[in-house]
Image (cartoon, rainbow, N blue to C red; front, top):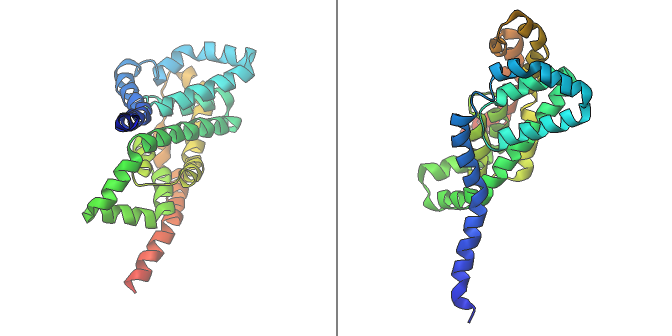
Length: 244
């Protein structure tokens, strides 16, 4: 008589799939209140000498530990992503610091994407398609211009990093496309912030805070907007083609 237990088994399986994303949501809320001071620029300034000493004594472990912590910060949507990127530049220089930053941020983003897609993404995507209307048309438009939209969300920091991890999961983006657009799309921003981090030694010596406004200077913003235009070009051409 196993048939009556089948619905319960399916329900339990559904809740198990939701556990990772629910855990991330709880961790994000708690982290916003409990870890904001511990994952701040001021905390990095206080512990900089200890971090440098540990790096010099245990370089391999410091690299591994940094990447794991960065993955955890992104995967759990904790505050301090920018500070983590600055720390990568401060401890390891522009290179290989930028590589470690990209690995940490990209891997953490993939974990969030997989958790969201497993927990709610597939059902949300199916419900949007079945419901029709504006939401379904928007979903179809996103899928038709998927590469362009994914790269734009990464290159142009208009969409918060957390939402850029969740939205693709809810519209049915494949893991391959998400991974490629994430690891390639975050390179420009990672280069800028890692470069700022590599100069933190002088900033600390002067008792100042880093100037993150460098992102909006013409020398930096120009190339980023150029990459954004290049990413949007296929989408624009498709619109003109349909208009004709």
